Length: 161
Ligand SMILES: CC(C)(COP(=O)(O)OP(=O)(O)OC[C@H]1O[C@@H](n2cnc3c(N)ncnc32)[C@H](O)[C@@H]1OP(=O)(O)O)[C@@H](O)C(=O)NCCC(=O)NCCS
Image (cartoon, rainbow, N blue to C red; front, side, top):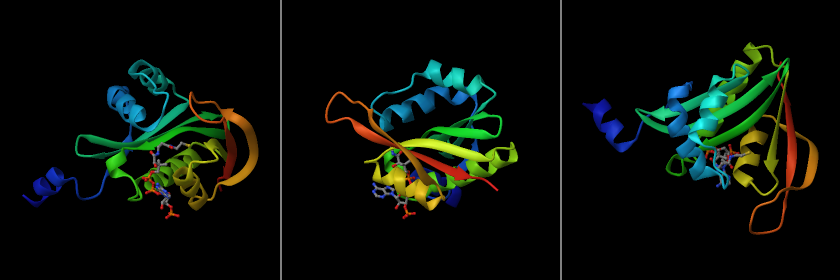
C-alpha cells in the first residue's frame, strides 16, 4: 500500500537502468522538454542500436525522469546528452546518473571522458564540476540559437582511474 501511495505521489527513489530501443519515444519527449533542438524518436532508436552508445535512464515506476548518453571510441568517451524532466530537477538525479555512467564507462575500459557545455548553463556546469570535470578548452560562438547572441561552449574533461 505504501509503495502504491509513493508511486502515485512520485516520492521515493528513482530506479536507474540501461535504456533500450523501447525507450526511444519517451527519451525523445524528455529531450524535447530540455533542449531547443529536439531529437526524434527515430534518432534515439538509431543511437540506442549503436553498440558504442551507452544510455542510462532514471525512472519512477513507468515515468521516465532522466537520462544520460555517451559514445565510446577506444579508451575515450564523449557525453552526448544529459537531461532530467523539469519537475524532477534539483534532487540529485542527474548527479546519480552521471556517477553511475562514469563507473560503467570505466568498466568498459574508458580512461578519458569529454563533453561540451554552454558557458551559461549554470546547472550543468555545477553538475560536472561536482563530478570532477575540468575545463580544457573553449569554443567561442559555438551555440547559435535563433534568438540571442551565440554562446561559448566549454570543453570539459574527466580522467577515470
Ligand atoms: C542540467 C540538468 C541535467 C541537472 O539535472 P538535476 O537532476 O537537476 O541535477 P542535480 O540535482 O543532480 O544537481 C546537480 C548540480 O547542479 C545544481 N543545479 C541544478 N539545477 C540548478 C539550477 N537551476 N541553478 C543552479 N544550480 C543548479 C545543483 O545544486 C547541483 O550542484 P551542487 O551539487 O553543487 O549543489 C537539468 O537541469 C536539465 O535537464 N537541464 C536541461 C538540459 C541540459 O542543460 N543538459 C545539460 C547539457 S550539457
